[in-house]
Amino acid sequence: MNTPVYPVRWQNDRVLLIDQNRLPNEYTYVEIDLVEDMARAISTMIVRGAPAIGVAAAYGMYLGAREIGTTDREEFLTKLVAIGKTLRATRPTAVNLFWAIDRMEATARSWVGSVAEIIPQLLIAAQQINADDIATCQAIGAHGLAVLPSSPEKLCLLTHCNAGALATAGYGTALGVVRSAWTQGRLARLYADETRPRLQGARLTSWECVQEGIPVTLIADSMAAHCLKQGLIDAVVVGADRIAANGDTANKIGTYSLALVAKAHNIPFFVAAPRSTIDFSLSDGSLIPIEERHPSELYQIGETIICPPGVEFYNPAFDVTPADLIAAIITEFGAFAPAKIIELQHK
Image 1 (cartoon, rainbow, N blue to C red):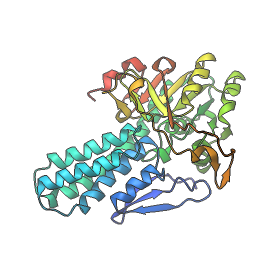
Image 2 (cartoon, helix red, strand yellow; image 1 turned 90 degrees about the vertical axis):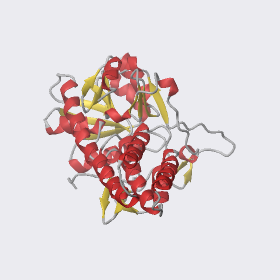
Image 3 (tube, rainbow, N blue to C red; image 1 turned 30 degrees about the vertical axis):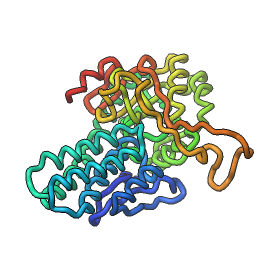
């Protein structure tokens, strides 16, 4: 295909979402023009990845605003907050969701004028969040390239889950670093963890790489330690769903174990994420809420049940990697040691 992937697009007065549940077998869009449909799309992971969720939620706030149907400013603002509450409940770990909703609510409150004047400003704000995220990812890619190991000349990188164009407005965070390395001739190969239980690495990361001709090798999550021990990996780059003020980072389940293995083999472990993913209200990662998802993600692949009746399930969607396992957190403002990200609080 070799064309940019944009998982969230505003077109013909509605939102188009790439249905990520159907990838890689079907590349289709879902049309969203009601806020309840946007909430469902976020919760069912038609759209996923913290930055992409934030963009989708921003458009969701606009869709909800135009459904409110009142000319009374205070009533409108009250109902808009209620819409925001519904959207906030869809994915509790991804802080970009809350950041985008806060920004949309602030836009509505700050605009002096009638309801009819506020509503179009919300669309402008959502489109700006969308455009800003693409620029942010490109900046993350450039800063990430600058901190990757200087040797060998062509690197083999490992990633977990999908922090690519599909997880953002476009280009990607961790995969943005990979893309920048590839375009600058610094990438030999990307190794992608399959990422159980939803297989985002197998379905999404490998799909993105194949579209652009980036050499990619898929491995099972349990193979990562072996690959590191064999010297196949020069650095690990992952995304994030929420970063605490001290640098502790929540990302897709399995990230923590990957960071431990990287530390054991003296391989640098990088987190790539926009500043909006940092939650300065949380002092450390123990305070990050961890979403638990339906057990069907574990016991079922497609239509096939893979375990016997009577077994019990535990399905946390994320884990928290302590800051001391992270070499640097790569943002649109540069790469920072985890202890230094507090400098970004007022950016």
